[in-house]
Amino acid sequence: MPDEIDRGAPLCLIHGRVIDGLGGPPIDDGYMLVEGATIRAVGRAADLRPASADARLVDVEGQTILPGLIDCHTHLVYSGFRSLEEIDRCAIETATINAILNAEKILRAGYTTIRDVGCIGNVAVAVRDAIAQGKVRGPRVVASGRIIAPTSGMIDTLPSHWERRMGLGICADGPNEVVKVVRQQIKDGVDNVKLGASGVEVGPYAYTWMTTMSEDEIRAAVHEAHRWGRTVAIHCQSYDAAKYALRAGADTVEHGTRLDDEAIDLFRRGQTVLVPTLCTLFSVLELGEKLSLLPKHREEMAVNHPLWLDSLRRAHAAGVPIAAGADIGNRYPHGSNARELGFLVRAGLTPMEAIVATTSGAARALRKADTLGALSPGKVADVVVIDGDPLADIRVLQDQARIRLVLQGGRVVAGSLWERAQARA
Image (cartoon, rainbow, N blue to C red):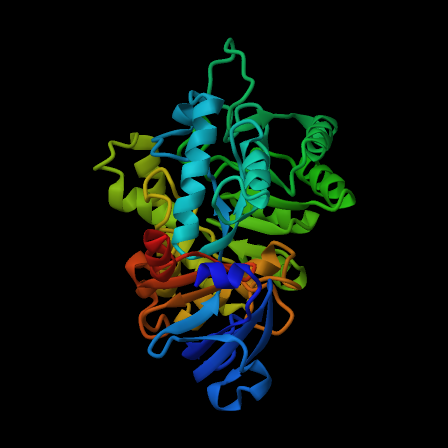
């Protein structure tokens, strides 16, 4: 089957339950027609036109057809590190190998697009280009460079007398320095700029409730990135960090651990999308002792737990747009990205809302809603076929054994049917 699709033969998935990714009612006995890299038609199987008779029909009765999943918060270089200091001690060569291996794991889990929001050196850009050129296997990558944050902020992990060249972050203080780093990253080919506006539980100095970037610094970075056509994601775990990011017009607020009424109102009046990253919270709560995480990590998450869930629930109730991002790889392994959807449902989203958060909602966050995130005619044919109904149990998306097909740009790239074909070949 992969060979026939690669030669350009139209493909028609038929008799499956179609979830369009836009939140509309599912089509229980539906079809989807793919021609080349594009979705040409979606509808009820009974309405399939005779003009599609030359397409290769694949019967997926009892299975669900949905858009390729999107993860808005990944770090491809993460590979079991227990702290930011350990990440900064990782050689860039090792980080690159880790990123390539992790990219394939994510693709096999049904994720056809990801946004990397912070890497060692410029690894995410390199991996993005290698995947696009067909050199390695992985999801489509929206690439960031190193995280930009101030001295003693979330990514300043090493002693002052150590020379810092290729770590996860780069320190910049004051609007002028921040703008210079943004321009350098644009020169290096990033799609997105990542800022660290608050502390982080896995950092040695700043705590999550501390705001570490000024509003002027954030505003300067967002203005410069947008001027060059790049998006901006901002790490926000303090009250003021979120409000500074929202007032500056950031594209996404990452984590949103502490959101007050003013922040919720700013979300409602703007275009910023919330990426809650609940896996960040629950991975520490569930695995902190087993992995011997530092007391600072575990104690901060115990404090953050009720605040984080309350902030998300109030944002959800207010209609704030939400996109899924798992932020995994150090505690939960890469490839288990769909855990985030289960946590979103536990926090109060419906299964359909969780699916939207990882399809059209995520595409909106990445400013790619015109091409990705939905099963609609004219969209890129990124598709997942799964054995089961995620609306009945969102956890089926976590079971890779139930992923039958993954299409990326109309080509079969993963899934059990693809693996069988590869084995036969």
